[in-house]
Amino acid sequence: MWTISLLGTIALIVFFLTTGHAGMMTTPLADSLFVLVLFAFPTVGALVASRRPRNLVGWLFCLTGPAIFIQFGLPAYADWELSRMPASPTGIFAAWLAQATYLPTFALFALVLLMFPDGRLPSHRWVPVLVVVLGTAALGAVGYALLPTLQILGSFWVGNPFAIDSTFPPLAATAGDALFTFVGTPLAALSLLARLAHARGKEQQQLKWFAYAGALAAAAIAVGSVFYGTQPAMFISGVAVLGVPIATGIAIMRYRLYDIDLLINRTLVYGATSAVIGATFFAVIIALQTLLRPLTAGSELALAISTLASFALFQPIRRRLQGTVDRRFDRSRYDAARTLDVFADRLRDEVELDALRDDLLGAVQQTMAPEYASVWLRPWERAAPR
Image (cartoon, rainbow, N blue to C red):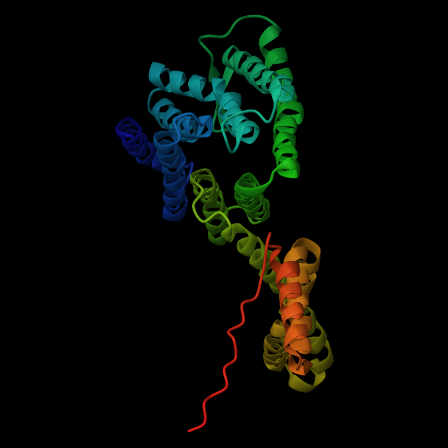
């Protein structure tokens, strides 16, 4: 833990010294989120490795922090150093190391997909996939390390002192990158889906946490790429990526695992509700502005009506979507709620005690499915006359 903290501190100092010159990130928000992500992965990895030393996922996360810095911090340092001294050996070496470790960095994430949550492969049948991931990443790494030129932040190129004059480096880099991207990584993700399909109990909840965080991060990055460079897009993308190590730590340490069902349910309901309300809001604004333009002469009446309509529609839409989500994705909860509603209706009309007891036991059996259930009734005693 102390070693990781020391390396992270050094990386942080170098990062802030170089990014301002390299132009890699120019906003305090982007810098802060980068630093949080830089520290989150190894911190969670160190926590998991200290509590679950046999779980390789923790050790992989420990390596992820330095790997992220190598991919983002070293190019910034190389750009800064080579702008001061075009032939600087340290700048060239930093650029070479970042380029050579490009695929191995992403291989760490592919290995996490393969080995989550227990640090082992799903079965021996997935050993070939592990070989493909490691082999293609190694092939691409050798090719990138021996290419004739080194790319610095996509802006300029410098000569590679470790290059060899052969057709092997470009072929190895291209083949390794393509096979890793289009074969190794999809197969690693497929292993996670295979685990989820056969998982039960705690393992299923662990996989749900990881899949939930990964889906949110992927969605946020996709939205951020559309609005690239804006403050909200950077904030949402950074926070979503930061949620991946946090969710992984919660899943592996088995802390409040079963809250994930409620999180997924609420995310689906309120996400869909927000999308519907937003679409309705803008559609009503456009329609009303077209209809009222001759009468209102540019007033804000259309905006006010759209806002009121959105507030009025929020609860009905949310309830409708809640029912749809429960029916489609949480059928057991939906069936339990329906059973309780039916029991409540019958309870109002039932007057016979034995029939009421049978209805109660039936409702408990359908909603909670216990191995055994019984009802204890206190004997009725007639009060003695005074």
